Length: 372
Image (cartoon, rainbow, N blue to C red; front, side, top):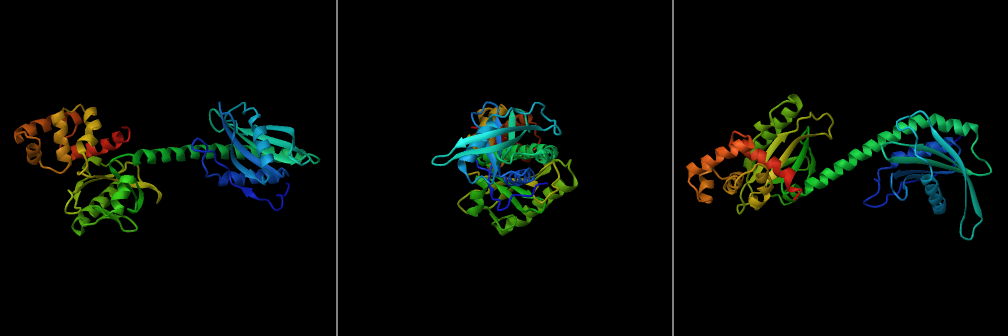
């Protein structure tokens, strides 16, 4: 095999803009470097192009200190036909060509080009382009090395593309959750904080009921810590030992805040899929600030469950921490009437207890508030 070119410099793959590809391309740069070295090339690029896109996007580049050369390799990649058989990881789509172009105030540049085309997903073309000085060209051994590497490269690029799609989905979900008016916190199997959306981050930073002790989250008020820790431990046990545990059994807690504020409403739910890795989420913590305008916050959920205006107001008071008698007084109805409304609410939401109702409304609010 050809030795890796001396004084090789690896250049990060460039990213277009918000509509471009991701920047986690270090592995692609490394694998392109191997292809350039084993085919005796002097430079190489890896480009992706979606069906209908006007130009390819540079994912990785090796020894491309010369911008005109990089541009020409990109243009040449755009002209390559996509692989004819998607999913055939063993039949290389290998092409050769001659690249000639002028640089301002310089002589004409001539390179021999070797290209491998891949189809990691429907409507996606990825092209690896290797350049070599034209007087040398690619010999039989270079071609043999490229063909031998093709099955590995094809599978690797396909896996990378799947990982990219999953990462983009995760980023989109994070953005979605950040729009919610609920505080949302994810803890791992050791209760370490993995994620807090923007609402939760604001609460933790302000020590508004909950705070972060450097490892996990705890109530600011010492009197709430035992019940909170017990609920977290129960959620973790449920996640690890009993994948079929009933999430409706998870507790609803009231966490003390500043004297001028009403208690924070917190629900702790185990995730149904057991956390295996330390970075896997195990428990989700919802926090609701009852000082918010709960009627507006809950309006989309109440509409989904077809609650009447009075029923929606009653639910809002109950979620804010009022008893059924207190809630009845606040909306100017008799306690007996409020209990009759509550029975109808239970039927519509398919719940049986007030705690279950609060939990359903909290979790449903997360799904709807970000779409408003």
